[in-house]
View 1 (cartoon, rainbow over the protein chains, first blue to last red):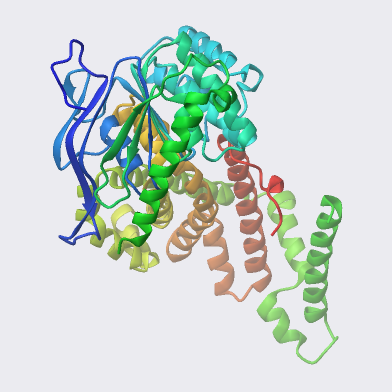
View 2: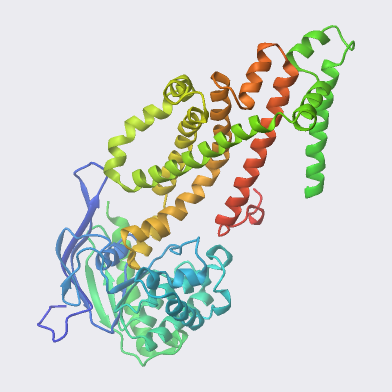
Length: 272
Length: 264
């Protein structure tokens, strides 16, 4: 946890970060969301963050993306402080984030279009990625014609087409049914094998955190959340997240995390 | 209900309306037929008038042309101004806050009363009618676009920003399409208001146009001509409205179709 002169700058590092928001518009009173948060995401590392609801998991990602500014402390990405939007990061939102007026393909290549890439090249790259997430024949469908899982796959392709060095994910699969979720998690693992990048995924799903992460960070209950534990996940590279349920070391870790979380949730519900 | 049955039902309703009108104004059917004819005109005379306008004398075309040109100009210009102003004020917090009370005041004002002033400024030709129509159309479109810009999905907005869109690209690829979805609802009422602007303008002072004809006929208690003019304007407004609906369908094809939604 202690930053000790690393050789390569972290993909994302939080140092003593405080963040709060106005309790009500115009009022001085502020709710503290994060207090004294410190941890790092190394390049190519997959870090998952779990915590009880309302513990500021999304705020953490917003800070990393530069969509929100912290009150105190430092947020750095690849050695540079995050000021304004983090150009090296891709963000996958929890809610629907596709542009409903664009087709699946149009959504996927939007980022390339904004960067001024030529039509032929961006269509080719967009198609390639759509194919990669298994939606080639849905390229010209609009979001409302796709299922929730398909929309998430389009959103994933939309984020990855820009080849971000850091992938931020806010409970991206929480709205999906269990089977679709597993499918998407496998797809995410496969995509990341082809296109290695640092990843920070927040979730309230413990199994997801253990199955995907190289490291799991546990946040305390809010207000003023902070990490209360970091666990390295010792496991072989998985091709299928369902295998995680059979690895004894991971089962052990899940138990430990579950106990820790339960205590936090209880404490959170007791707080005024 | 099937489409055909719906249409038949609508036609039957129209038929009964005309039948009631006919019976109410028929000669000798009841004691007030003279007054009824004075108030509502007579279906047969209205038909004769329309026939004369379009076929026998062919003298309606220049009038109708003037009214339609005024309406279309007012509609197109008013909508464009409304769209531009709505986008601008919706996106620029400071300009929006600064101009808000003035826009509210201008919107609350009964703008029809500007017609004589526009007549003085711009003369009795089409310019004064177009100006009146624009003031009517502008606010409807403006407020809807403004609303549309404000209600842009914040998640979509953040997501597109993360994809690297510049301010200009945000405007073009997020605000504009999102606002358009809101705007088209208002364009239907804007068509009607553009007609109001044109006809009221003509009514208050002009030498051409359907509003002018209606005014002339009113002066001599020729109710049938008045009704014929109103019917003509209604049909024109319906046609324009259908045109807007077609454009809407083309531009907003990305929206789920209403018939695909579940009934309540």
